[in-house]
Length: 276
View (cartoon, rainbow, N blue to C red):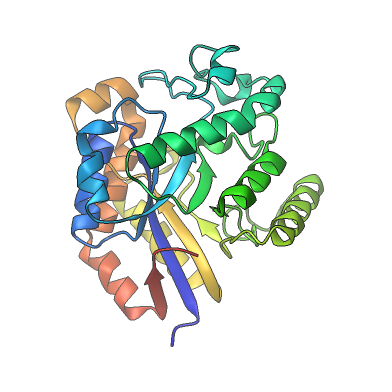
């Protein structure tokens, strides 16, 4: 029996039609094991029923910011709408005062997902806004919310694969405190999380991106970890809206369908699972 298990997640269902169709097709072909859903997105209705038909393992992909080029996302709660009609494009512009509105906003985004027919089992954050990566941290509120709703949280027990060896002391301390709190609340956590975090300008070609993901397969430790990607179909509309960065999403879709990637998964001693 494999001692290494891996959840392969396609993030951002609801982001735009090119992403949504790619995720539905990947589930249809059994090339991913989980997805995350942006319940605040106006793009969800067209493909939601198709996705639900696969009974996917689903995470709530909380948004507190919008993305440049995309339609601005609106808060789901009345409390958050009172201070902002739409989420800012820049996650660094999130006001720390929103901490008072975080719980009702999380509640509203979760309920919206359930109202569509999804059964989310975990929580994570678009652009890292819950984690304080580019603004105020809402990890404490997020962990308590997960405990209240029996959800897992995308908070790795180890930072080795996602952050690396050179972790600032303040980040290590905050991470340790968060893990202790999560364990106290009995919240399921992945052992490691991993993704290619390089911007498209630093990825010379598809083969380079594929090699980075192939190397990850050897690095996952014992336990259940998560690999998350952002696959999407190509289109002139998406390239016009999002620019050159769209190429990375297209390559990540190509990777998940690549025979070399599939062979590497088959040869590894990793069991693919739907949840940690």
